[in-house]
Image (tube, rainbow, N blue to C red):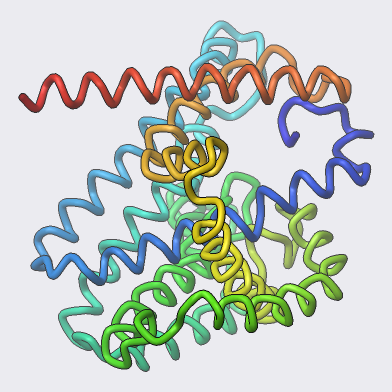
Length: 320
């Protein structure tokens, strides 16, 4: 929707629904789940350090690979775009790498004190709108600022505010273990609590949809503040409970099994998806009509699923 659709479709109700579905249910959930599983790793700091470097470097390599077509046009002089904006775009893998490194440092100091991580998450989001931009005079500072919090056009998932979601998942794991939350919280509880949460989210969904549609603007999805963060927390609580109910009653259906398989392989699925979308977008940027988008969505999902399946088989073969 963001890269293929004509502008009038992007700005329509279809575009807003699409951007919403690619907003609160995606990156916040992904980062919170990552934080949850990091908390269960019990690894030393050196693990977090190495893992952080690998993911951060992988994010830069993915930026280059998914923009290879555009970078080619820039190189031969057919595009005036700045290549560094695409090479050093602050996307989800670089955020994951920086987050893991920061979590590793914090864990050295605060151990399993989940209250601290909850407080820090709220603090990070609260101060995000007030953090200074380093300025436009020095390119090095621009890019460093973009990875941390700067509201630049190529800064999609900076540490502020997005580290907060990792901290929430990280803290929740420790709190859940201490108070045995998951053991006490069954299907009936999910049904009772998810309904009012989702109703509350539904009443305020127009607000959330506008933020999700306003990707790069001041106070938009990529650089949101405390109010939207609170809304996402409300939504995510209901969303997770609702997902638990789906697993309970339809967990073995083909569609749900496919979604779970994608979730299990989400990183490589994400990489293949962006390699295809990013390079095709150079040729058809914001030119596609509504029905063409359906074709592209189904086609790319099918191709990426096949590539992910093949990749999994190759990994199994190489591990033998």
